[in-house]
Each structure stands twice: as C-alpha cells, then as structure tokens.
Image (cartoon, rainbow, N blue to C red; front, top):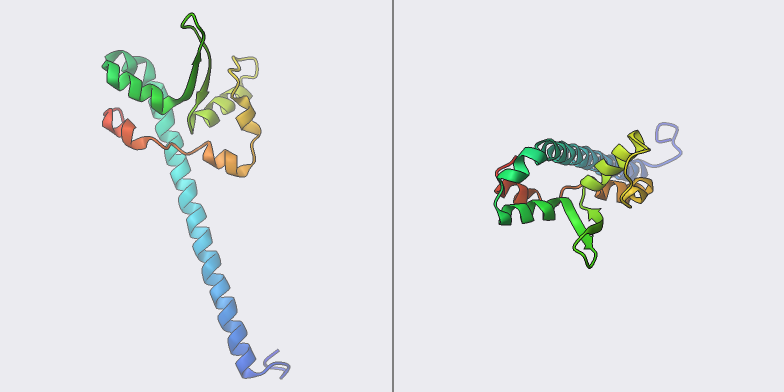
Length: 142
C-alpha cells in the first residue's frame, strides 16, 4: 500500500512498528508455551519414576517420610469409622496418570477420580503439575 501511494510513509512506519510488536509478543508467547510443555513433561517423568520405585521405597522410609510421601501423592484420604480407607483424591500429576491408566485399562478400579480426564484444557494442564517437588527431593528419592 505504501508503494502504490495508498498510505503515507508515516502510516507505514506505524503499521510496521505495530506488526513488529505483535510478532515479538507472539514469539514470547510461543517460547512460554514450549517452556511450559517441558515443565509438564518433566513433572510427568518424575511422577512415573516415583511410582516405579514406590513399592521398594515406602518400606525403607521412616514414619515422617512416609507421611510426606503420602501427602505428595494424595490430596485427601477418606476413612470410615472403622479406620478403613473408603475413597481418596490424588494430587497432580498423579490424577492425570490415574485417568490415563483408566483409559488404557477401562475395566480397572475406578476410585472416583476419572472425572478429571474429561476436564477442560486448563484443568488438564493443572493435572500435570507436580506441585510438591521440593518435598520429593528432600526424601532423596529423585
């Protein structure tokens, strides 16, 4: 449009600056999305590693460490009057891993958390985030 004389050089300069700024913002947003994806993948890898070591690890921990590990895994444990666990809610990203396992093995045990699998994108991403990594590191298991 500038070459054909439909806009002035000043107008072209303003448009060029606006487009450059939009391009810079989009590049930053793309870089942030890529970083978030790496963080989510890292959290999932860490959670899977923890789950593979869980059976051997739990028996070697002292009482306080066992409590910390259970707090990392579980958001809530519901116990009846007889002391029997009747339900539980997992923390992130274990919720996602459980729902993934439920979709792979649909006849498996459904403990009430598979509804997380159908959550919107924000809920899905929140289900991937391992929020208690520091406590996991303190247990010296990662």
